[in-house]
Length: 329
Length: 272
Image (cartoon, rainbow over all chains, first blue to last red; front, side):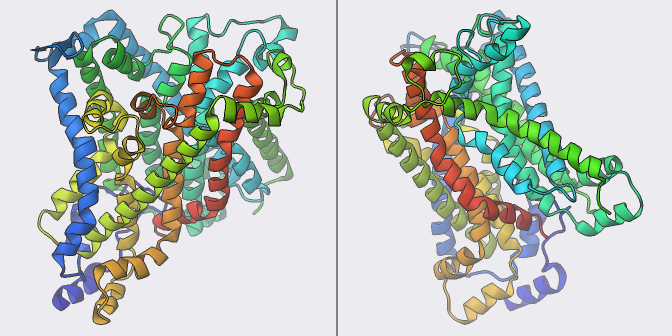
């Protein structure tokens, strides 16, 4: 034990350098970290088991087991509410892209999610940059007001927006009335999608803003000051210094925003009833309809795995980037 | 070097407009929540005097009060459970060496990309076969473990000097007391930060409680409010909006209490 300690202290006692911005998910799988950091440790292995066991049991039971089961279901055709099961191989995956209504849902989900992800990250970054400029007072007040929508559950945000855009008594049409425009927001497919996207962006920007604010606080002030001395314009400073330093946080938010746009958006889709004409019926809404109402459990499982693969892909990209992270100091 | 006066004014203008746009829907909900039935389905933005009556109707007559209690309870239990379990798991990963440690860590880390919602039907069948549909357990247990929390605490522990654990061992402090008396007091900022994430997560949760619970006695408030609207039990928007406004209170309290810790927690985890 003591040898290990001495060696650990001498070589790798300090944690690996990070780029400065907080990156909750960006540290990478930490293969190296294990070798380096287990210098001094407790010898009681049984205690480690007790500390770890609850986490492992819950993750295995409530995540890994359903995951495996979803894989299995995706290979089946389950009909008559479980009465008839037939192995169909990859047919369900084929159906995702050949069945016109499912294919449309994939395209819809891709478009709506991309807009939501880019907008929530972009707007949050823009606001964080403004709030963290030198000489801007009242930052805390703005921030507290800006994150207020985060206190509303996504489903309840959907209700508020449904009311705001109500063609009869909503405030939006009241504001538009003098201009002679009275859109029927929930009768037109595109307009309904616009309202859905606005709801999701409005509900989520605060979350990303909170994280960007935290990341801003940990930016290395020396680097920023050096750039000031060099006479870089604010625009150059942002794109060449701040933005790269914030990139671990941006990658982390990319993952959480993707999960939000894919899954949490379900709440808004349900409040809007998936309509009109399926316009707001994104994949996760299709999945639950297939799984619980339309007796298409196999197809639902395959669609679930498609979403899962997309999230996994983005997460892996994030972790890889996190490991490659550059030190700027 | 300070920015010019014009730049400062411009920034404030942009920030004020953004703040107004983000607040407008909430101000609208607040105004509506004070109106009587007739006014609530008009375009009027006047402030009425019906808030207490609407709030009481939402809470008592339509059962949202009970559901608020359910939501607060479930959120508190999950937040507490996640914090305790991920502190424990992170301690096991950082302060012990045991066989298959890397595998166990990968197993935990991998769940970062496994959203429960994607497994909805399989999870529903499992929880059903455990007899936990329509129960608090069914809303709490599946979410007790946290890859994010374990990861954050592990990162934090790795930055605590190793002398501490040596000194503790010299003094004969065992691992559980080390966790309780040394690691927890050193981790309040991270605990605060992860608690904020957990509260937002639980408050936003919809898909799972929507399908796992049909009994109003166990139902979470966000599900109950959508049901009120979609089943057209209520066409008084004052009551709906009063319910919406009341659901904002607990998370707002958490934000105000924990905002500083949150920011510091993540600033710290950024290794500064």
